Length: 73
Image (cartoon, rainbow, N blue to C red; front, side):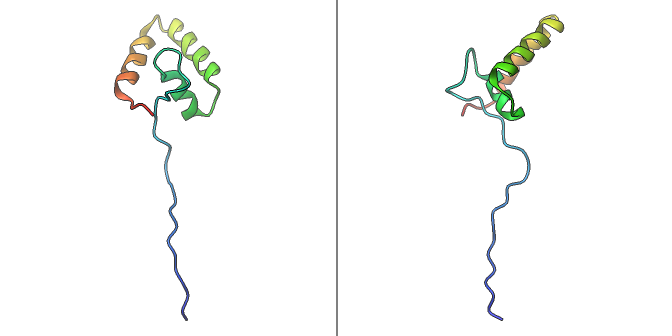
C-alpha cells in the first residue's frame, strides 16, 4: 500500500480588494470595486456616481476612505 498522498493548495474565501494601476480614472476605487464584484468598470462608475448623487455626496467620503485604506495593485 504505497500510495502517494499529495496536498493541493485550495484557495478559500474572496480575493482581496486592490486598486489597479492600469484601469483608473481618478483614484482606482471604482475599478477595484468592479473587479471585486465582477462587473465592468463603466458600470461600477455609473452606479457609484448615481449613489453619490442620491446620498447627497456622502458616498464621496466613503470613496476617499476606501482610497486611503485599500492597497494598490
